[in-house]
Image (cartoon, rainbow, N blue to C red; front, side, top):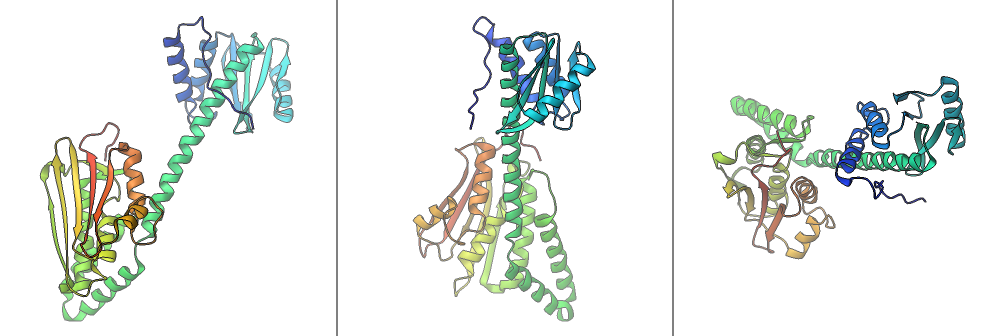
Length: 348
């Protein structure tokens, strides 16, 4: 496997504007050789390496050209040979270089009237940008897969119980049955429908209040709840679906195993520049070591989506934020979410 280092300018070049130009090219190639900014990347590469003409193409053969082009027959012959041999090709006044991304041919770079050394530098810059784009796309796909998995964790047991309670009230208390059915529809809409990446604290609290209304109908006197949120944090942007899993976890693994009634308190408040939300129950609790394992993604099913939520929070806000879990066996559990009240790029 070949290891490539990011392209660096020659020692004689002024590094600041050169590196800035290289970064712009790299950003323009984030969506690949057929992306919407690939043409800007070709122009930037030609200016950066000071060559008369430069072309980029992916495996489809759709060529983007910047500057003075080479003769069509020369370009076609060079492209055909590179795509079949995956090796550099030299034609009169033209160099055609294969672009290998993660050891797979991804396209071809063509440069007119230049040296092998310059062409190789251009190839290194393009390949580094394409590899970076693929890695970031893979990370986004992984995050989306985690969110889909979290949605899939909605308890079938809860859904069955909620619908059973609603059906039992249709004749005896039709108004309440109707209200609960509307709550159930809202709950499923928010939990399962396709949303943007971020939402507001207000929307997350509305979702957990709907969920708690359904759970109170299912558990009756066994569940007492209190929800408080300070007005100044209602508009704080947070990743979608970070609070409902914490409340569901408190009920499933804190309250339901108890023989007697349980209490859940959800609070949201401002602490300086941070928004702090806590979900606390007086349920069965757990050993702190087990809680730490669950939060690290190494535990059993004792924490619905806790590791998922923690990873998403830390990936957005950094390692100083995320979840903390305070618990002891027989002493209940308190899960705290801490996020900045204002974060650049995080908008609902």
